[in-house]
Image 1 (spheres, rainbow, N blue to C red):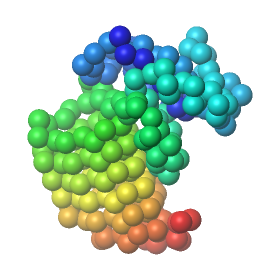
Image 2 (image 1 turned 45 degrees about the horizontal axis):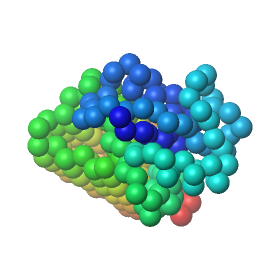
Image 3 (image 1 turned 135 degrees about the vertical axis):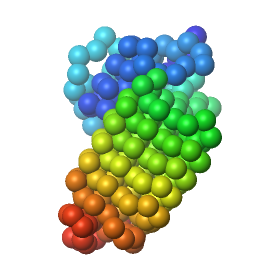
Image 4 (image 1 turned 30 degrees about the vertical axis):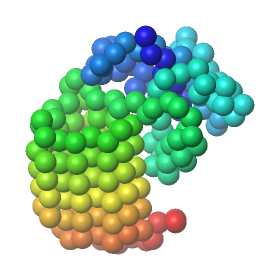
Length: 216
């Protein structure tokens, strides 16, 4: 049985742990949750019997005892920070794929990504590393979702959409075909994107318009 460490003890951690406990994750081997780590909290946001740790020295000790880690963190850049830190340790990021997701056979999913229940990913789509494809989101054919992207719940991406690194697609946002979303951009909830979005921008509305630049 392989041991797994959760990093992040807010609501994202709760959802992912419940998926494992409720047998809603595609597994190739048996797993045991060894602990939860979050250096921003004194205790988890949810009730759990799993051992909780919050000191950096704990993390260094923990990674020597586990086989996999899961980054239960919604912030794209913080996920990247932890992935970089853990790279030198001989543990692997665990890829979570819900049994309730619909994924075509020729979809490629990068290591450490999380595919949540009800999400749909169609043919020839590429999902990068450490992405979050959230509940009931839809990604059509031939899309390219690059590393550390967060597609939020019920967002809909039409065919041949490109989303560059660190970008967020808000809840219920819609992106029409052949659109490119630049790096580190944010698409507001409920927005309808009809034209390309450059890097480092916040856009929102129907049709989506530029509101401001993101913090680099």
